[in-house]
Length: 207
Image (cartoon, rainbow, N blue to C red; front, side):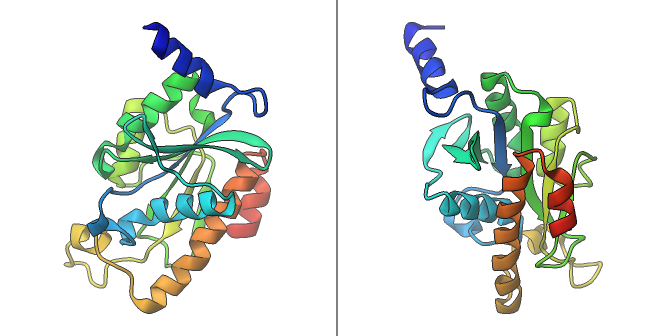
């Protein structure tokens, strides 16, 4: 490690005002204008809403993603949007956790779930990837599924033969978009409780 890398690590891992990064909060999605506001980008939408509520932008580049350093209800967190494309999300997440020497329990992931209707959330303490490729990548590279997550409902395919990729990369109807505005705001509020250790409260309020 060069002296410049060492200085960067010191300056980004602690500060006199906020202390050490305690959580990495990740919103999953695909980079690029063509993917904005698609179902698969619900995680991006939710973490952008969280950043907006904190008066910040996620616009710095590191860890194969865009990030921001934020105080979330007094807890210093890294907000992260992987730019690896969904299927390789784990590369970004593991880099960030390794850098700050954090365990999986200090990771929160927000992502889309086709088994939930738009407007619905499901908060879980841990669990399998459930067929979600972004979560599959994270769990495989992390070697653990023992981390909390916020699932944001985007609705199921209109019929069984509908191509899944076309569905998750498609845009919301106007009615569903209105529901999503509420659900991503709720996801943002749920994360604020999770970083305080109030998982039961978040689950009772938003599940």
